[in-house]
Amino acid sequence: MADEILNRIEKHMEGTSLGLAALAEVLQKMDGRMDADDAYAIQKAEEENAAYQHASLVKNIAKSVLIELADQGMDVDGEKVKTVGGGDPTKGATATPNYVGDSDDSSENVTIPTKIEDQQASIQAEEHDEKEDEEKEKAYMGKKTR
Image (tube, rainbow, N blue to C red; front, side, top):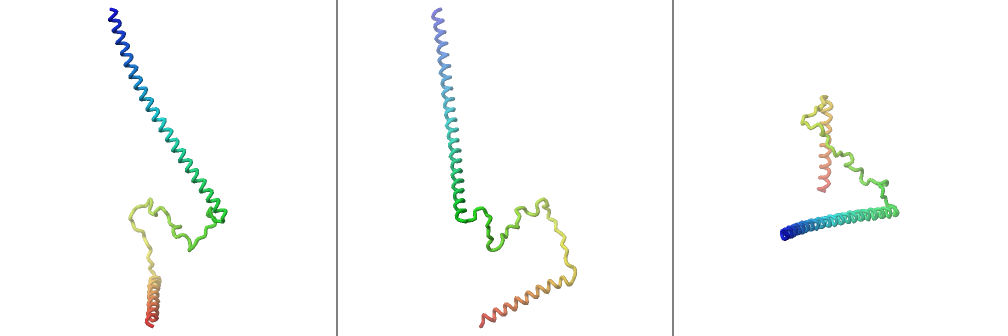
C-alpha cells in the first residue's frame, strides 16, 4: 500500500510538473508578444515625432524666408499684385457646368429677327468686310510686286 501511495504521489507530481512547464511556455510566448507590441508602439511614436519635427522645421524655414523677402521689399502677402498683359482670362470661368440639375437634351427656342432691315444689315456688314479684305489684299500684292 505504501508503494501504491508513493506511485500516486509521483504521478501527481509529474502531472503538476508538466502543467507548470506548459504554463511557463504560454507565459514566455505572451511575454514575447508584449515585447513586440511595445517595440512597435515605440517605433510608431518615434516616427510620429520625427514627422512632427520635420513639419515644424519646414514651417520655421518658410517663415524665415518670408520674413527675409519682406525685409527686402518683396510682396509676400499678395497685396501689391500687378497684372501684366491684362486680366486673368480664366477668372470668369466656373468649375461647375451650367447643365447641372438639368441634363435633358431639349433645344431652346431662339427668336429669329423677322424684319427685313435687320437681316439685310447683317448681310451688308458681311459684304462690306469682304470688300475691305479684297482691297487690303490687292494693296498688299501691289506692294509685293514692286
